[in-house]
Amino acid sequence: MRLIIVSGRSGSGKSSALHLLEDEGFTCIDNLPVNLLPSLIEQIKLQSSSERQKFAIGIDARNLSDLSKLPALLSFKQLPDVDCKIIYLDSSREVLLKRFSETRRKHPLSDDKTGLNEAIAKEKAMLEPIANIADFTLDTSALTLHELRSEVKRQVVGKDKSKGVALMFTSFGFKFGLPVDTDFVFDVRCLSNPYWNPELRQHTGLEKPVIDFLDAQEDVQKMYEDLLKFISEWAPRFDNNNRSYMTIAIGCTGGRHRSVYLCEKLAESLRPTFSNVQTRHRQIPQSSTGESH
Image (cartoon, rainbow, N blue to C red; front, side):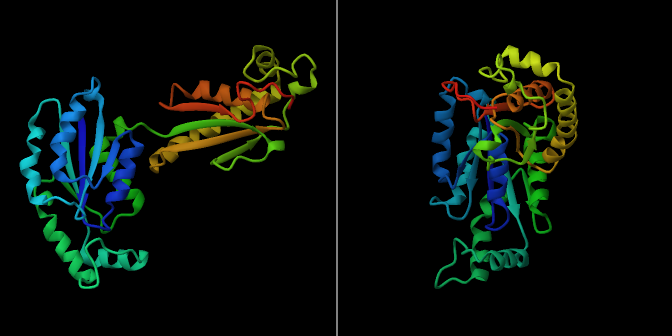
C-alpha cells in the first residue's frame, strides 16, 4: 500500500496538497489522530486489494493526540508492503501572517488569549516532531498554488505516474438548455441532420443507421477532425497546469443524433492517448425514446 502523510503549518498549503493527491486517486483523511495510524494500517492490510490502496493522511496542529508520539508509531514504515512517506509544508512567518490577513481566516491555535503571531510560533513548536522526520520539506513561501501542486505531484506522484487530465464528453440538446458543468461548449447544429430522414428519426447517434449516415457526411467529418485536433492540442496543456479533469459539451438541437455521434467518435479516438475518457448523453437516458433532433 502507499501512504503519504501530509503535514505543515496552517496556511502553508496542506489542504491544496491533499486536494491534489485526491485528484490523483488517493483516499484522503484530514486531521486523523496520530494514535489511530497503526489501527488504520492494519485495517487496510486486511483488504484483499491492500497492495493497490493509496492513502493520504493530513496531520497538523489540530490533532487531538500528542504529536511527539508519531515517530514511535511509524514502525509500520519498515514493513516491505507499506510505502510510507512524510511531506512537510512550511512558510516564513511573514508570509503566513500575510496569508491569514488576506483570507481573514482564524488560525486553529489562536483565541481570545492567543494572538496570530503567538499561534504561529506555538504551532511551529508543536509540529517539530513531524518536521524532524519528514522525507522532504517544501517551503511554499514563494510558490503560487499551481507551483505548489506541481511540486507535490512531482515529488509524491511523479509526472510519469500521474493519472493525467480526465476527459468527459457530454452531448446535449440546445432546446433543453445549456449544461452548466462544462469547460468547453461546441455547437454542431450547422451539420447535416439525420432527424429530417424519417427512417433515422427514432434512432440515436449510438445506433448504426445514424452512425453510417453521419460517417458519410463531409461536413460532419470536417467538424470531427477540427475538434479532434483542438482537443488533442489543448487538453495536455490543462494537465500541465494541474487541471485534473475537463468537460467538453457538444450540442445539437435535440441532443440525440449529431452531438451523440461526435462525443462517441472523439472519445474513441482519444482513449489511446488519455487514461480516463468518458461519455454521457443528457438527452438519451436508456428508457427514453422521445423525438428530438
